Image (cartoon, rainbow, N blue to C red):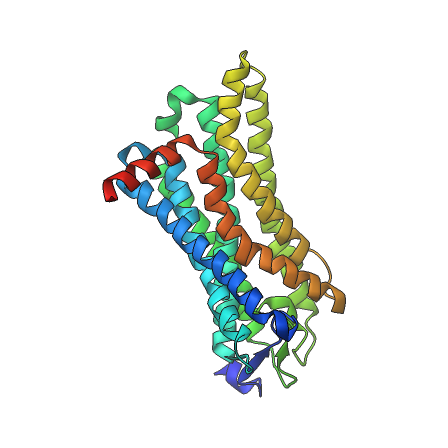
Length: 309
């Protein structure tokens, strides 16, 4: 009730991608292709991880979680983006906008915490191969996964609640193709310095902490790699980490670029480009990277494909 009484805005207008009219169909088809790839590839990973008994290991448990997150993370933004590309009125209700803010940050922050858990899993696999199944027990995997979801939900709740409580008196044009915190703060008709501080400090703390934990895991991994005497052994151990490291670099790079900079007129255009990366491209690339660099996953996929034919 307080949110309704404090604002006169009931709907927001999304500015969209800001592309030329002649390019709308081409951009629509490209984004649709990436979205289909993200859905099919991530769903395939989930199905393979369930039905292939040989993949019932901690690594593929976390990969299943990542695939699940990528499907819904992309779905928070892309369907609405595709609809707006082919329509003149890019309207979104106030509460729909706030829900989009919440779930975008909920799923995104859950994913970065999950990356830390996955890096720890890779460290244990390389540093303690004989005790791997004991250390990474079912309870530990569930605990790490659940912690990721709880931290992600808590982080998103801070931003979505604080953003929803702001008064919006007009204009109501969000300079983005979806509802995000920074462009919404520019529309609030009150002092938003606290919101910006929360965005930088809370998101910054989460991003920095999870990134440091991930980097720390790789520091220890590199230490154990030097102890492996044969080149073949090093390459085999390194191959288990390369896919995860590539995905982490993509996700953290775009997230830090977007949320750790001050908001300016020019930066919002850059934010749109970065948002396309982690909402459209990255969810489609993640399963491809893991599949192409993973012999077990490729073998399981071929087995599943043969059994279905």
